[in-house]
Image (cartoon, rainbow, N blue to C red; front, side, top):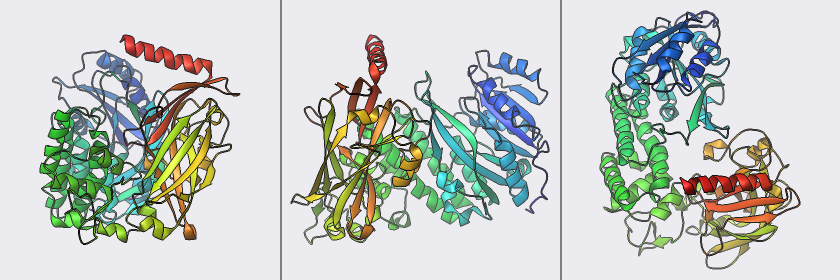
Length: 570
């Protein structure tokens, strides 16, 4: 297909398809964010999936104020997102099209940015940065930020296999005739993760793709919503089955189109993203769920061939998959949870086969870990235990670095850089005074190195550095702990981040495995000079890492108490 000649990004060339179901509280805000993009938007096709609330009335009223709004009401609810998007594709007349969900928004300039990139490059698809905005806190985490770090034009998707990791359909602009010419549509009816399939069909058609580093979509994450979104509602085993089915169909589409490199990358993406995400939560489920999840995972992973496992066999996702295939019943769930964390942690015991080869465990000696002996230190799944001993005005943080088949001693550990980072504001506080603390590591024998450092509760009350300085010191949101926002009172969740320094300047960024036991993870109110009272709750995250819930000031303490009372009464 020949690229089209560039046209002005301000021409009315874009149709935005907004889909919604019983979302009267948000749908007009979504439509208005599309209209606010300016004259480049020719039409906003608002497809209502047979809502029973006031959605249609609100949309109809909005259409009377702006002729660009076209309201389409489906007669029967589809049970999914694919059918209403297909309905919108049938109605759109603009040469380019975008998708928007009723509870999300397009940030200012999104359409102009994508349209300019598409027309200047003659691209059939243009994509930009999506940010996940956690509500009500407002914390923002970029989605697949490495793909959108700079302007780029990809002649064929196979040139950048990482594209399979961005399965979202909403942060992209598509040439309408490209979609229609190749028959690219969403699965009909109730098909969770329909965007996996749509994105695979797009990539299989081999479009030229323009990438921009601009924010083009704001994905609102409402974890306290009465009805969770599909991607958040993972407590039912049906969600896992739907995720694997969508991944299977996407792989088959790419393989059937001769896109072998992309198909292989899609399978690797499942191991690195889906498998790790669900494994982190597996220990929280009941035994019935765990058995069903494990059996289904084994059946799906059995479809992988030798080439899918050959590359980097000790990468966390691949190693988790190999453990699942090797055991008919769920096993080693706490250890697998830590391995699935970001960055990965491989907890002891570190077993050996009779010939001295590193293996997963004495019970599974067939799972060799020999590639760890040659993996770069900066990528090793190092395990650091953290024991937090609270005191009146401070706490003692004890850290213990474990040996890993001789690699740690070989690299020569010298020090630990310690910092706490607030998820809500991105503010950084050190373990002691200031924004970060470096402590020496002492060999304690038995393949362990230790360090101790004080934690002053006043450091969480206010002031300190903002996120910019912290990002330079440690990894950002790609590791799952980043964020953005303004400095504040310190209220919120604080994650412990560590950097292990080795001889010769090498380092590895890690999180710390939270040790549990009497007196270790107890909530307590402590007195500090600023603010007067701080409520501190150390806890282990879903991935087993040490973190803190902090509520500074008497008002913060009371808000936490009131919230707990409401939950108890409920």
